Image (cartoon, rainbow, N blue to C red; front, side, top):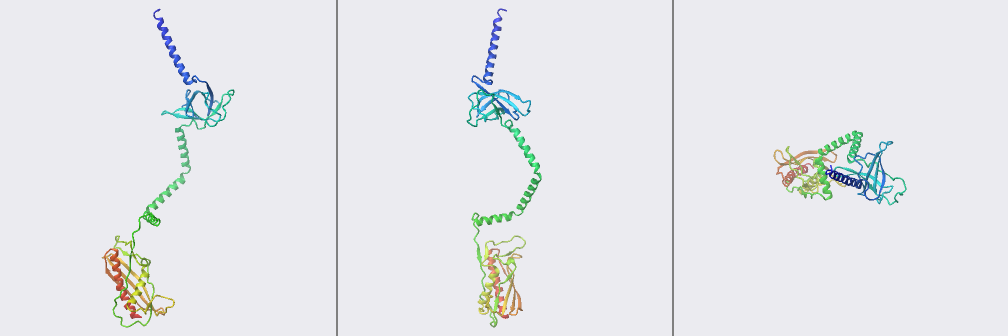
Length: 371
């Protein structure tokens, strides 16, 4: 017994020392350390999930103390009271903002204090200072996300009909855009050209008709005067474009080729020149108020185009009528001419000019004989 007593005493001393060290560390970390501490009461009006005794207290991000007590309010089930001990030099004021922060990967909660104003600190003789936490301080990101999703779900449920109508309208609008995509491309291209932002348009190539100069002999000079009106035509021929009638498949469009004027005006000018080239200068004129003509020449354009079927051919066809001064039709005739052509714009314009020359010669000879 005497030899074993010192070992038992030594063991007891070692255990006492270890307990003292652990107690000192616990007190140093959770009870305020060596400095003077001030105890504050913090009231939370919501959950403080995960907050424990000994949790840190931060002021503007710096640790200044810890939580020393947590209590529920028996009279208010939503209220939680936490007591915190912070260093006495911490500038806590009545308007100090109180919240919860979640730190680290595990999201350990700590009480976060944030300074607001320079108002004087509470009196040392006053009762325990009370701080009120922000109402949403205890709400975690998960809970906040759940609440936001719940509100969004309610909003969608309340507006389901308008949303359904809006989606249907978007579907209709997108379908309309798809159907008219080519037109939209054309509109955008036109706007780009108008503003100068798009590519430069291809230069226009202008073609003209020539009045024939060689005519067969006219037996007798006309006794009357002929007023040549502007030819009539359907809207298709009232254009400067060189028209193409395709053979069932897509044909050339001659997008850069133009006549020098709208076709009816151009035909009127060249028909008058044809009469003048046939030495009938004193017998023809445009309609004028001071002109009293014995006859009028009415021309209706039936065809003036390049036909691709069965082979490329320039076709010109006029229906001509001569009216007397009393409005009666003196004579009428249809003139036709067809000239083989190629499918490029220059060849088409040349062939149409040649076909017009043939028709113009026949028209002049016929009209001179009638008047």
